[in-house]
Length: 202
Image (cartoon, rainbow, N blue to C red; front, side, top):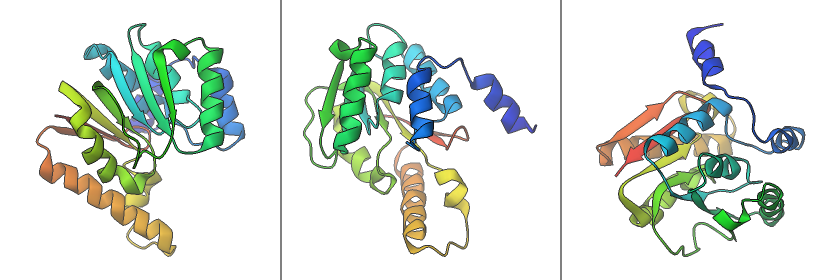
């Protein structure tokens, strides 16, 4: 065990939604790493977040964790894939949080969202991170913050030689986005947890 593994183990908490977690593993559905999720939930608690916009619902795993922090959290979440959207809808109902979740089926590059939010969580197509950031930033409440997941691409972002053309293009887009944020936003934090978290305070 190295230092990173030691800290990772300390950050992981008991799984609240074990059935959904297991379903994701069995069906190879990407979900956020537990240690990164723990940091997000602590930010929600520390900042007294009450409204969250999530870009990329998948099956509702991270959304369920977000609304689990406290009963005042309201979530608006957008998912492109229709099957995932339906599964997420079932999961929100299963855990009786549907009244606190506005579950939207649509393309996050095109949909128009009503309202403003204390936190925006971007966890959709990684090549569109900058588009999502600039599109939804105006919906952030004063003092709000944006979190972006998967800024490391499982280590791909630092690979020097990538043979696969699509992977190379994705790596280049994410790397450009990471540096774009560094150069254009004064208050940023890059965390080497999970698959890499970026926190931007506006």
